[in-house]
Image (cartoon, rainbow, N blue to C red; front, side, top):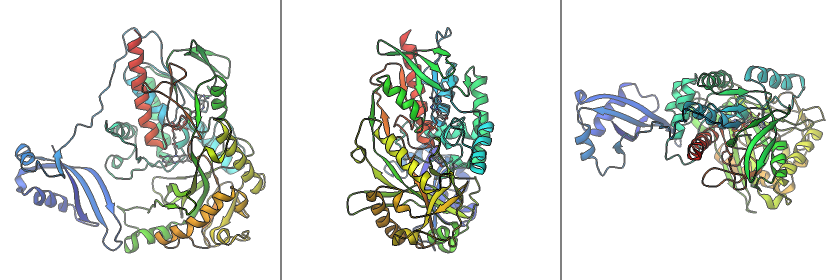
Length: 534
Ligand code: FAD
């Protein structure tokens, strides 16, 4: 097949336009084009009145070879690459021990699935509950303010991204096309097929829940085992090598290959690992607030007269501002047509995040607006970032009225430095509720100054962004792990052989897709290591 990139067509083109564009581009006749397939569809909305769809197409013609020769020097015409996934190993017939995967978020899910597909029959352990039970607990917290510290937005089957917008794009380099493997597995489990070709795929919460269940069933069918309410409280190390894990109920499971895919909120587990001398470093992360606008404002600002177009969907945005003092402020985890959610996993703390359904049809757009910080901002040991997060989250709990409501402020008041007294046109979506206050007490002064500088700058890019009535809710602290559990080129901890730090919690991913890709890489490294040991 031949891959054609950057085929541009106007928004609203009719179906035959793609075929015509291929014929014109390659200068071939209609009968010479056997078929075409959309590999990717993106858009360029820089000119709101003239939005362009941009396609990457795989085409089959009667003269592929001669066309590839003819276009040999053309950057936009290449043979379609083989992006199919190839397993790197196969489990031995006599499997002497089963690898363990701790955590069943996107990283552990893909690590577990790929290990199972290669025949290694992994044992997967997650501290939280299976996804339906977890959904009840999570929604229970949002409605009734009853927090289950082991079953919530952060912990349980599917991991942190289960109650999310399910955005699947990532900026990680992916020369081996692992992201295609992830997308194909998701589609197999019930995700919409369009995630295979749209440039910014997303799934939304409800679909994620049923997909996770199907992927669990597949792993079990392949001989894997998944245990819920199975928190790993200790690891056993002999001569610098891992030999097993101990669960909260005292049970010990032996293995010399353990993937650590525990996400960024497993603070107690980080503490345990640190106490066990597993090498950990502090790393930069970001803190800030969630901002909410009416989705119609964002649609209008981004798409003008094309707002509401079905192909474009609810508009998103991505913003960065480099402040005079050297800090960067950026939008993060933007959720079009979604809701702001309570995302704490610890008692008496308030944390914000965002989610949406596949339809992205809720009234408000929300996004984190966060300031980049690094270990010099919270000096101490490798775990000092966790303490910093905790202080901000406890402070937000106090500002919110000590009942899990989140502190909030209108943007106009925040910029003026006065406490908000009444809501304006933007209604808060945060559950359980918000308390209007002065958010300048919620973050260190340098963060407040940076956000105050950034919002007017963002308003120059998205008209209305600094609207007086837009709403800030805080605090957004779980943007990524404040630590890195260092691993070597063999994917094993540099201090503890056989321990494979993986995904977001270990500092090797930032989002569903990159965590899932890291899970595949770690599964491969574990399989190769198990085989090499024989
Ligand atoms: P996690 O998903 O955090 O999974 C870790 C798992 O380990 C959890 O299930 C936990 O229960 C388990 N665990 C922890 N400690 C232990 C232990 N000691 N023993 C046993 N099990 C343990 N990213 C996107 O790309 N797109 C989005 O739209 C998006 N939206 C988000 C919305 C919300 C509300 C949240 C909270 C996050 C969102 N993210 C999003 C981020 C994304 O969810 C994470 O980047 C991703 O889930 C990280 O995957 P992971 O597998 O590394 O860790």
